[in-house]
Every structure is written in structure tokens, then in C-alpha cells.
Image 1 (spheres, rainbow, N blue to C red):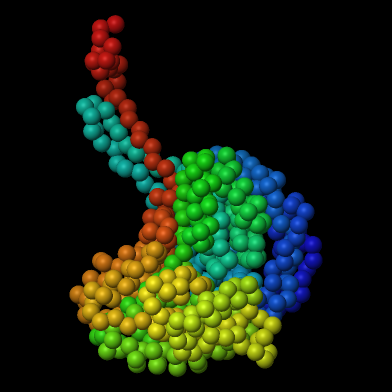
Image 2: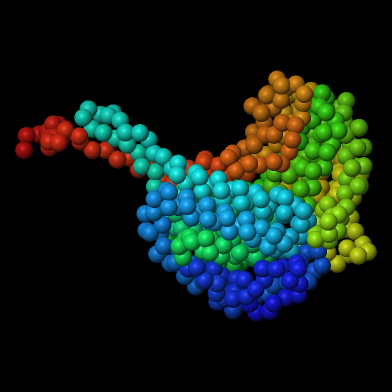
Length: 511
């Protein structure tokens, strides 16, 4: 590490584990070779907490080589052996849970209560799930589908996976990329966002400490343009998995296509929050505030567009604004903090610009500003509620990625569902109603990879996560993710124990 930064041991207890550098290649921490450094900044204070040497193409090449060398042995391990290693991995993560929670809060600005109760337990649960799922990589049962020939299907790992994870959920995204890949027998090189590498590095080190062989999990921490593009285009990388914006996802797809890689994309979102007139108003209000402000709104599945049927509209706006105004911004490590800063001042300014432009065509009911006083040095922005915007306006259609909720009215059910679908994205949505038939219609007709009923945001390891349309394709989590990280082989053999020549004669005649 070029400079230890300013984080106290209390805020960053695992700092010493990362003293050797921010690249994890072949089971060892090393320094990057790009010749440039980068700082992890605490977004709550603006202070540098970890300065490291960025990865360059040579580091990517070394990580891919390590993954390629480890692949035959790891792919050849039995499902039981991989399962046992992942169970040990889950145990190591549990022992270090507090270290992970504090590192995640420090680099992201998330309230510590969120990382302790959501990010870290969810990651441990995901690891435990894939420890079990590793034993259930099944092909198709054997059968005689063509005369005396027997056919069956093998499910096999793909090879070296090159993954790129975003900065909003660094620990969970590392887990979502790494776990299904290695449970299926692949090896992996992960590039975390350069803003938030700490927990990805700790995650890889925990994998080694749990007995997962060197080279199975590798981390390269560099810029997207240099390290990321080199990883996606690398000829020895068989698959690319990317989570991030739709715009960058298009670039990733363009590069991956040149080498005909398997591709998995989890991209942007603009989740609708559809409230019918028979909904429990108080439940919907609390769900909207929680769904819009989770992770300071930096979530592709966050509730961003609330469509409320007209009889409930005015009350919903009034009560949602009042509840937002009770949300406590503050130090992520303080017990009473509900909402931390955005990831950076750049992101805070981007969010503020969206809201400032909207003032020309919509009404900002509450929020719409950065707090002053003791929080002025951090990347904070107040929870913001916007109304009276047109459906085709920027603030309704574009992904803001901040603590901003837009509320619009609708009349009939057909209109509400049409408005919910009126976006290029299709990652997640929710519908609020006490009528099972109304709710059922919403689940059928809203075009999104996940539709919650009378809730918004929860996820579980056993169920898939992934989108439609501009939100990408492929699934994270659950057994469905194995479809992304395995390939199918048809095996067929003649079971008569004699050489068969009939079909040869059909083609070549008697020879």
C-alpha cells in the first residue's frame, strides 16, 4: 500500500490484512503495476482511508494466468469437495462479519446497522446456499432417443470467468459473481470498482483462508477503461459477467462479442412502485420511503417512480414527504443514522443536477438539497420527493441513483400498469393492493425480472435476480445462476457393443 490513509482501527479493523496491496492474484496480495495510485475515500468525511497502486494490463494477464492454471484442478474436484470448501468459506466469513461490516460502511458510506443486518448476513447466507447448491449441478437423465443409442447431457464449467462489479454493493456483488462461478467449477478474475475494493479483497483472502485453492479467486483493482476492458477482451477469459449501467454494459457487450464470450449483464433500473386505491396506505408509504432510500437510493431495484391511484394520491404525497423529513442523516458509524452519504461528491452533484433541472417542470415537495453544518464535508443529499412531472420527463425516465422518489397519479388499472411499463428498463417493480386478482394481474403484466407484492426490495438466496430489456439478461443468485456459469454437452454412444454400419451405408454405400 502506497499510504495507509487516515482510517482509525475502530472504523477499519481489517486494514492490516490489506497492507501488501490491492491486487489478489494466485492467493497473494500484490501491488498494481500501472504506475498510478488511487484513493479509497470515506464519503462521509472526504478523507482518504486507503491508497493503493492500480492494476494495469500486466496484472490482468497475471490474474488470468493464475485462474487458468487453477482451472483443471478446481473443475476436476467433486461437487462434494467444492461444497465442503464453500462451507468452510461461509464459516470464515461469519468469524469476520464485523470486519466486513465496518469496511463496507467505511468505503460506501452505508450506515453500519445496514451492513451488519443486510449486506454481510446476506453474503454469508449466499455463500452457505451455494455450498449446498454445488452438489446439485445436474445434467439430464440418460435415455434411448435414437434406436440403440444412449444420450445424456453433461453440465460442465466454462473456464476462466472475468467479472466486473459495481460500487453500490461491493461485498454482495463480489459474492454474486464469485460464488456461482466457483461452485460450478470455474475460476474467476473479478474487477471491483476502484472506489470500493476493500471488501472484495477481504472476501478473496477469506476464500484462501478457507482452503479454496490459490488461483481460483483473483481480484484486480484498476480502472474500467484499462483493467476492465483488458479483462473483458482477454482471449483466455471464456465468460464475462458485468453489473453496472446500461451504457457501460453496451460497451462490455461490444468488446466481449469480438472474442465470442458467454455474456451475463445486470444493468440499470427504474423500478415502478404501483399503488392501487385499495392498498394499505400506511404500509405503502413506509414501503416507498424504505424502497426509495435503501443504500441512499444507489440501488438498481430502488423504488424510483411511484404511481398512485388518484383517490390515494394526495394523502400518499403528504405522508411520504412527512416520513422522509424524519429520516436522520449522519455518520454511518453512529447508531442513530438512517441514511448515509452518496458514494462521492461527484455522484452527489450528479443527483443534485437532476433535481435542479426538474425544478423547471416539476415540484420538489421536500429535500432537493445537500445538508450543511457538520455534514457539509460529506457527500450527503437530503431525501427528495418530486411531483407534477410529465411521464416523458428526464426525472421520470432516467436512472438517477440517489435518494429521489417521483410520484405521479393514475386513474384506471390499465393506465397504471401501462405507466409502470413505460420505461426502457425492466429489473424490478412492486404493486400494492389487497385484491389478490389485481395483484396477480400486476405480476403477469409488469415487464420486470422481479415483481414484489405489498413490499419492495427484499431478496433471498434461493430466488433469481436479473432483468428484462435494457436491464440486461441472465440471473444472479439461486440455482438459476448455474445456467450462466455452465455449458451443456450432449454425449451419445452406441450401446449394442458391435460396430454399426447401416447409417454409413446410407451415406457412402457398400464399401
